[in-house]
Amino acid sequence: MPDSVRETFNDHPIYSLSEIAMSIHRVMERTYPQPYYIKAEILKLNFYPYSGHCYPELVEKEGNVIKTEMRAIIWSSNYQRINQRFEQITGEKLKEDIRILCLASVEFSPKHGLALHIQDIEPSYTLGEMVRNKMAVIERLKKEGVFTQNKSLAMPLVPKRIAVISVETSKGYSDFMTTLESNRYGYRFETELFPSILQGDKAILGMTARLSEIEMRCKEFDCVAIVRGGGGDVGLSCYDDYQLAHRVATFPLPVLTGIGHSTNQTVTDMVAYSFNITPTDVAFSLIERFHDFDAKVQQLFESIARRTAEVIAEEKRRLLEMDTARRIAAPRIVAEHKRQLRDFAQQVTLKSKEMLLTQGNALSKLWEELVRLEADRLEQEREQLGQSAQKLSALSSQLLQNRKERVATLEDKVRLLHPDNILKRGFSITRLQGRAVTGAEALRAGDRIVTQLFEGEVTSVVEK
Image (tube, rainbow, N blue to C red):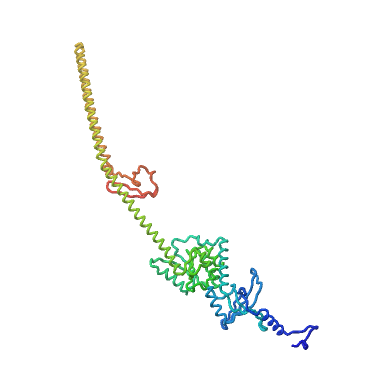
C-alpha cells in the first residue's frame, strides 16, 4: 500500500500482518542466502509415514534447561536418503534425544513462520556424540565403583536355573533354547522367559523392569541371560544407556549377554558377568560349564578309585609281610627257647657234677679225719656222713626234677603263646592302619579297624 494512502494511528503508519511477514521473509533471504551447518538436539522427531515428511523440533540445552527451540522440516525427498545413510553409519535410525549436525537453510514463510529446512545430516557427528556418551557412561560407572561388580560375583559350578530376557518369537531365543535342550551330553536346564523389547528406547524400560521382577525371585535362579538374535548393530544404543548398564552392573546374579553384534561391545556387555556375540554362544558357554564340572567329577572319581586300589594293594602287601614274618619268627622263637633249655639242662648237669665232686672231696677229707679220730667218734661221723649223702641225693634229684618241670612249663607256654593257638581260643587282633590296637583310647569315631580272627578278618567302623 503506498505510503500516501497508508492508514495511520496517532500519526504512526499501520502495516498489515502479511506486509510484516513478507518484510521478514525478504530480510531472511538477504541475511541467510545459503545453507549453514547447525548442531542441535532432536527433542521430537514428528515423522509422518503417510506423507513421508518429517518435522523435527530442535533444541539447544544448557544442562537440562532448554536454551533455544526451533522448528525444522525434512521433506520426504530428503528424509529417506538421510535416514538410510544415518542408519548405515550409526546403526540407529533418526530418533529423538540425539545430537545432530545438519546442513539447513534458514527460511521464513509468511504462512508457516520460521523454520530450518534440513537438506542433510552428518552421521559421523552423531556417531561421535554416541561414542562420547558411551565413554561418559563407562567413566561414571567406574567412578561409582560398580563397573566390575557383576563380574566379581560367584557363578555356580552348575548354572542350571536360568532367567531369560528375550522375545518369545525371536530367532535368537529359539536358537538359545534349541541349543540348551538338544546338547549332546543330555544336560537338563530350567529356564523361564521374561519377555521384553530388546532394541530401541523402549527396551531400556522393558529390560530394567524384567530385571526387577527377576531380582524379587532372586533365589529361584542361578543367572540371567539377555539374548537377542539378528539385527546386527541396529538398535543397540539402548545397551549403552546408563540406567540399563547400571542395573546390570549392580544386579545380584551373574548376567550373561548375547545380543547379536560383532563390531564392538556395548556398555551393558562390558559390565555383564560375561558376553557372547550370539544367543547360541551363550547357550554353549552354559553347556561348557556343565561339561567342565562333569569332567572334574569324573577325574575325581577316577582319582579316588585309583587311590583306593593303591591303598588296598598296600595293605594286602603289609598283611602278607606280617604273616610271613610271623611264620618265620615263630619257629625261630621256639628254637631259641629250646636252645636255652638245653643250655640250662647242661648247666644243671655240670652244677650237679661239681656239687658231687665237691661233696666227694669233702667225704675223702672227712674219711681221713675219721681215721684219725677216735673209734668212739667214728660211728657218729659215719652216721652224719650217711645223713649228708641222703640229703645231697634228695636235693639233687629234687633240683633236677624242678628244672625238668620248668623246661616243660616253658615249652607249654611257648606252644600256647603261638598266634594261631591264641586266635584259635577265640582271641583276636585288632589293627588300625596296620598297627595293633592295645587300648580304646587310641580309637576315634569313624576309624575303620580290621579284626584278625583264626579264620578270616572283619572290618569295622568305630561309633563312639
